Image (cartoon, rainbow, N blue to C red; front, side, top):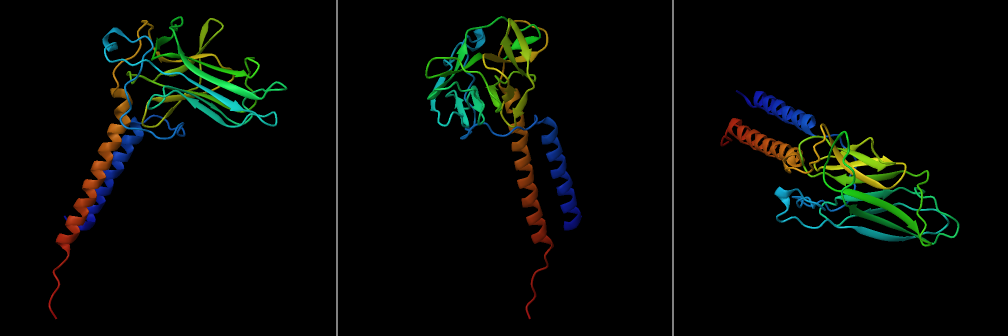
Length: 248
C-alpha cells in the first residue's frame, strides 16, 4: 500500500471517529461558566441515597448582591461553588423588573429539601430554589430579557429534563445540554423551585453512577488518541517511502 492510499484510509478512519462523537454526544449549548476543571467532583446531595451517603459533601448555596443604576438590570450570573457548579442562574440585560427606587438586587440560589415527587419520572439530584429580591426585600419578577436556569445532573443513565415546581405540579421545560459534561439549561419565565427529572416510571429514587456524564469525554479522548496515532503513522510511512539522497 502506498502513502496516498494509506492517507485516504487514515482520513476515513478519522471521519468515522468524528461521526461516532457526533452520534453519542448530546446537543451543544454555549458554555455557562469559566474554569472547567477535569475531572468533575462527585455530585453533592442534600439528601443522598443510602449507597452514596459515605463521602457525600453538603451542597453549596450562593448569594450575590448586584448594584442597580439607571433603573435597568445588567448581565449577571450566580453559581454554586462546586466544580462544576450544580446550579446557576444567568440573567441577560433587562431580565428583571425593577420597581422604582431599587438600588440593588440580591440573587439567591440554594438547594431545598425534597419536594413532592414528580409523576413523570424521578428527581436526578437536588431541587434548587432561585430567587431575586430588591433592597426593600420585595421578591422581583422577571422582565423581557432572557433568564436561564442551569442544573448539573448526577450522571445517572438517561436524559434528564429541567422541570419547575409551581402550583403544586411539576412542569417540563425545554432543556438543552452543555457538551462534555452533564449540565442542563432552560430558559424560564419565572423563578422558584427547579430540578432535573429523569423521565420514566416514578420510583422515588434519584441519583446514580457518573459514567453516563463522562461518556462524551471518553469518546473524545479516543478520538484524540486515534488521530494522533494516525498522524504518526503518516509521518513514518512518508519517511519510509522517501528515496535516500544520492551523492553527486
